[in-house]
Image 1: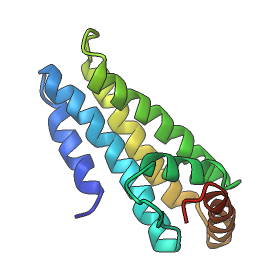
Image 2 (image 1 turned 180 degrees about the vertical axis):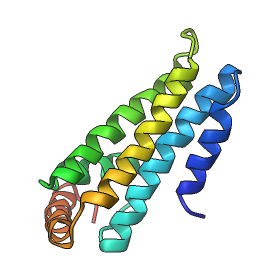
Image 3 (image 1 turned 180 degrees about the horizontal axis):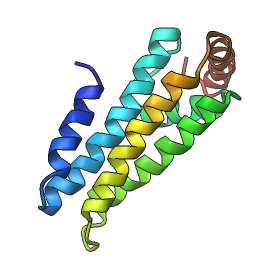
Length: 142
C-alpha cells in the first residue's frame, strides 16, 4: 500500500458532512504525510530499528526537524501541525470540526509532500540523511 492512498481516502471523507467523516479525513491526511516521509526516509537509508513501534511519529518528525535541511525542517513543521489537528479531531469531541478544518488538513498534507518532492535535491538529501541519522543515533533509535 502507498501512503497516497490515505490521501485519496481523506478526500472522499471530507466530502461528507458528518463529524466522524470530517474528523477521520483529518487523520487520514496526517497519516498520508507522516507515512510518506517515514517510507521516504526508509528508502534513503534511515529506518528506526530499535523498537520500531515506539516513538514512530517522533522519529519521523524529529529526524526531519534536526536534518538542518530547509525541506526537512519545513516538512517537520507541517507534520507537527497536522498531528495537532489529528489529535484535536480524535480527542476534542466537544468542539465542532468543520469542513474547512478537514479541507485545510488535506491541503497541508498534499502541500508538504509536493513541496518536498519538488524542492529536495540529491545533495540536500545526502545532508538530510547524515544529520538525521546522527540525531537518531543520539536518541538511540538506530
